[in-house]
Amino acid sequence: MFGLIYGFWKYLFSKTEYFILILGLDHAGKTTLLEEIKTKYTKTPGLPHQNIIPTVGLNIARIVYEKVKLVFWDLGGQSQLRSIWDKYYADVHAVIYVIDSSDKERFDESKDELEAIIKHEKLQDVPILLFFNKQDLKEAESIEFLSSIFKSITSLSNQAASSSSSSTTSPTTTTAPIFISRSIQLQSLVALKGQGLEEGMAWLVDNLKKSSRIILQQE
Ligand SMILES: Nc1nc2c(ncn2[C@@H]2O[C@H](COP(=O)(O)OP(=O)(O)OP(=O)(O)O)[C@@H](O)[C@H]2O)c(=O)[nH]1
Ligand SMILES: [Mg+2]
Image 1 (tube, rainbow, N blue to C red):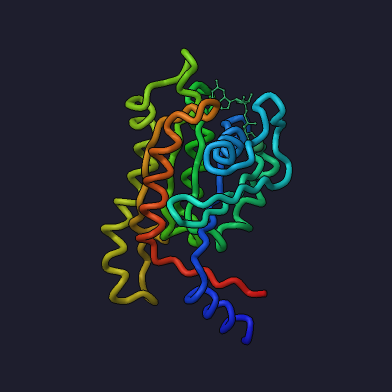
Image 2 (cartoon, protein in one colour):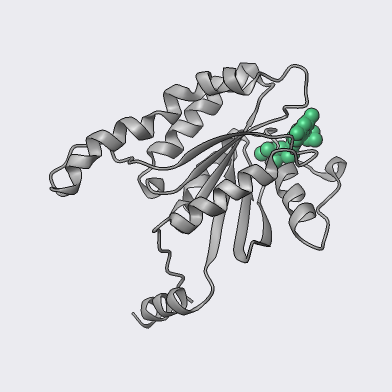
């Protein structure tokens, strides 16, 4: 009980810190993105790209962006590691989902994972930033094409938003979908060079400030 009250007091009176989970299939470029974030927004450069290996545990980056404290958590995307993703869902304010724009054979797999994220009850109010990465590759699909491919998933939020509006009046009896209206942004990215990163960050922070999600940290 004391922990809860202390957590709430800390939330109210300390400078807010936002937690952002970076997800996506293996080889999408999540860790490359994380290291680029460190290079671009901290005084300590991230790892050289050639030294980055597939993630098994958790990589963390802390930055201050326009006076807002951000903590990024980068998890492994290999299929056997995805079962731990949801352990973090209750503790994050936003999700960055990274897609390899050149990996055509796995667009469906990536869409399935994104759909599970969008529908997850613990993530129903968090902004989601979709980074279509590796736009420097000649095999990469265009943003227009990728937007149409992923539209069936990203439009889920809007569909659910209309049916969930009735649930606000009788929340205990609703059979409406568990996912509700949220902000989703589609952004092209070249994580290797940081191209598109600034645009994504600006959108993310703007939406984090608008977000009403409160996460109480017990100590
Ligand atoms: N051409 C190109 N390659 C990239 C880009 N971003 C990442 N890569 C490459 O993609 C490969 C995978 O990158 P990682 O950052 O390790 O991918 P990951 O999503 O963290 O993978 P897991 O940790 O296994 O989940 C590496 O060879 C990167 O150099 C990019 O913008 N362009
Ligand atoms: Mg990784």
